[in-house]
Image 1 (cartoon, rainbow, N blue to C red):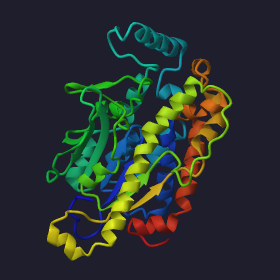
Image 2: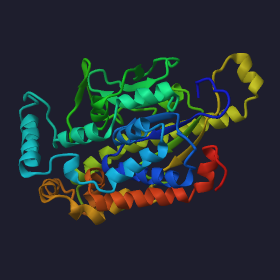
Image 3: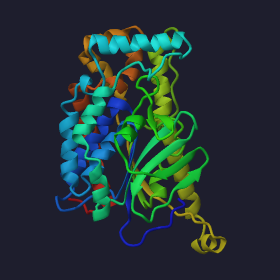
Length: 386
């Protein structure tokens, strides 16, 4: 909305939001684009922005910006064969020991030294080190395959939403209320910090501050792509958009810890995106009724931004409830204690269920949702219907 329009072909920014295992849905969308776009089409997303688990998917695409189809294939290979122990420790000592330490920290008022979290996500660090070639991001920018790649984290000390970005030399840092953009080579700590679900995974230190999941305090999820020069936005979320008034069902009792935690995660990952997209749509409508010469005369640096949003057509908590039994026994036992193995707690499970059957179901859902909009997506990305 405030960036100056670029000349020539519109620059499409890809925004991949967070949500733990729910990010498998985004891989399904990439699978559809893999099939729809011509092999010689090049990178359809010069600007790639990711948050939380979406930042991991975005990083793979950024490292393969010179070959979009290869990046999409690599995403599919990892996600369709996922197991929990590739993301966090699921053995008895790793899971129960870590959760016991978490409880001790809570009872002692946080007096323990070192990182404290419900689960140990050190296996994820190993997975990313094997599959993400971070120096390739800079090489792709230098070669012109990529204009910018950004990862958003949340600072626990400053309370700011910080977008770390790596891009062309013409880009500038920005600062707004509670959010800033900082140029810096992106590495493993940024992905680990951005995907550190609060309480569940430990925060990560970058320079002088500890950071956690980027979806926290992210009041304007589409803003980084616009600051980096995007003219159009493709947003891939991991929760259904609110298209109608909520229906309040009779309560069956006091909500479990898992139900409350799932509600909190939904608030972190879904609400700000819906509000930001609604604000963008409202600005677009306002600009459509203001004559261009009036905008130019008053010096308003605003412009309409075309965007598309892809979100699950089916609640992912419903799918998670079908596959919750695939979790390792230790994790099932741990989640049982907070009520997550009941249907009312499946929302929490949907964020932690890194198992291939569930991930494949989400990939298929994302693929189907994208294919249902194939002609519009191809036109939006600058390609005619195939």
